[in-house]
Each structure stands twice: as structure tokens, then as C-alpha cells.
Length: 416
Image (cartoon, rainbow, N blue to C red; front, side, top):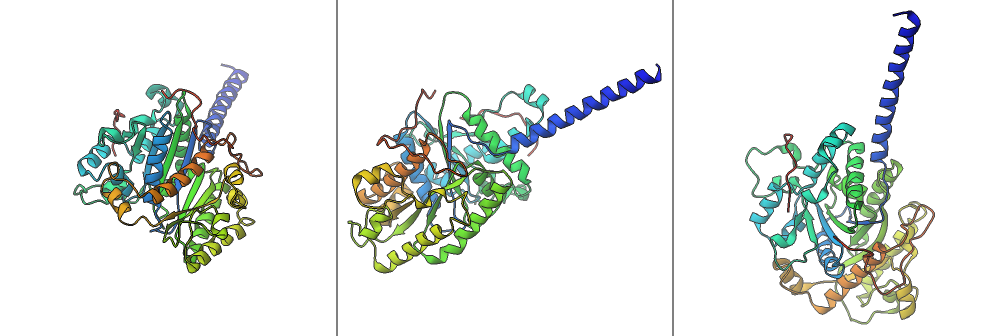
């Protein structure tokens, strides 16, 4: 073989290798970059402070969404390493909880399926990712649950629970602790893309831990379209809110998420009277509280407004509050703030019997209003960009449906 031919072959091989590496790197980067999908809306309930009602409100909103959006799928993702919403959805059944984990209906097992498909050859061999294989239909355990309500839990909550298997791998206890940023982002975008395939529409609600920044928390924020912020009427929560916003801004800077804060609601409010004052009405709340509590609410609301210049990409909607009490303006504009009164005895009864007992009419109305606002975000024709406020449907209807719904390496089993 002459020198010229040899040089040509070497150049061809080197060029082919360069193109292969370039395409592989580009493919990986594109997979990890956050993007939105019209058939999927993801709402992550988050606050870096615990005890503000994330889990309880997330459960009630998911239940209400499943009832009012019967032609769509509602997926609850338990991103708390304590698994409280998993137990709520399964009626407290430890047998059902064990079955869900054993059936690999967990975030970690879904992540494993995604990682196995990272290369082009592996994805061709294993086929497209089917996220339903890692979801559990709640009705299979609780017959009174809506048929369209699904659950994806996590293994960390099982390892942290009372039924932990002796000798279980301790590295899983903190929820994807060792996952790198690009891995978390890639998993998040793969989940969104896989849900967006086909004709079905998905509403995903995610519960998170307060004050814990483990890998599953990061995943929950990377998947989100909107972050829903529950808070107490306590000005001591301000610093935690600022911490969460800084963390979310870092994820934005690394193109790991497109999430913005969709709304903030004050939880567990003790009601003074059922008719709102002018100030409470301007905040979009339907009842009145004591002067002291109202003062805390106003300070928190003003604090969020004051942070808009610091977090312009995250707090687009903060000014979208009801300016007056007129019915026309209430319906035509989305409200950033909401409130849920203290549930009392009926709230505890529902926790003990999630799909059998009922909330009081007043609390049920508050949950209904919160769910309606989340639904308005879900039907937004165009999710807003960095320089654009959300376009909210003015129709009283909130249905999002525009078509029919229709460890060691191991094979992915079906999970139903």
C-alpha cells in the first residue's frame, strides 16, 4: 500500500471517529437540555421549609385533577425520601407499598431504564422508553380511586421506612445522591419526552422534601413546568423561599430546567370570617383572617414581589393577582396567590381514609380554587418564555383534553 493511500485511509478513519464522537457528544447535550412539551404539564410542589403542607395539598390537588380531567392521565411522583404521599395514595397499606416498589414503579428504576438507552445501539435494541412500565395505577390498590390516577414512588422512601430490608444498600437512602447534574437533567428530559409521545395528555404533580437538596429534589425541579409554592403565613419563611429561588436559578443557568413559579398559596389559615376583606380579596383569597395573620401574608406577598427584579425568569406571574373583587376580572386573570384554611378534624379524617372521607365544604372549596388555578396553567396555549407572561385561557372550562386518551442490570418488567 503506497504512502498516499495509507494517509488517505488514516484521514478517513480519523474523520469518521471525529464525526462519531461529535454526534455522540451533541446527542448527549441535546438530551440533557431542558425543553417543554405541549402534551405534558408538570407541577412540582416545593418549598425548602418543611411542614408547610406540600404533601397534603399535593395529594388533594392530584385527586381533584384526576376527577375533573377524566380524559387525561394524572401522575403523582413521590420525590420525598419519606414517601408520605405514597402512603396517602395507597390508603396506608404497607402491602401495597411493598408491591409498588417490588414492581419497579420507582424513580430510580425509571432512571435505570433511561441510562440503559443512552447509546444509539442500546436504544435500538431495547426499544423506546415506556414510562408507564414504572407507574402504578392507584385503583389496583384502592378501588374508589380515579381510574386515571397513577403513582411513581422512589426506593429511598422504602429504605428509610420501617419495613426496610436488613442489609439494603445504604447509598440509595438519600435519593440519587451521586447523580451528576447532566445525568439528572438527561433523566428529566427523557421522562418528559417519553410522556409527550402519542395522543395521551399528562398532568404530573410532584411532591418534594422540605429542606433537603438530594438528587430527587433536583430531578423534580428539572422536570417541572411550574413550581407551586405552599407556605405558612409566617415571615420566617422568607429566607427559605429565597434559598429555593437561588437554587432554581442555578438550574436555569445550566439549562437544566425551564420551570417558573406558577403560584404561591398560604396554607393552614385560621379563618376569622368567611367573607374576605378588600385586602384578602385583592390577594385572591375568599375568606378573612386575623389582623396579625393578614400582616404576615402581606409581608410575604410583598417580599415575593420585591424579588421579581432579582429572579425575572422565575417570578413572571407574581403580579398576576386579582386587583378588584369583580367577578369578570376574577375569571379573566390568573391569580398568583391563593389560600387554604385550616382543615381541622375533617382533614385528619380524609388523611386516614383518603378516598372515602370528605373535606368540609369550605376547605373543599379552597382546594377546588387552587386546583382551578393550576388547571388554568395547564391549559395555557403557550408556556411563557423569558420575556413573556403566561397566556391563560379565559374560558370557564379548565379541561386540557383536545383528543382521546387512549441495582444489578435486569430486564424492565411491566408494572400495572
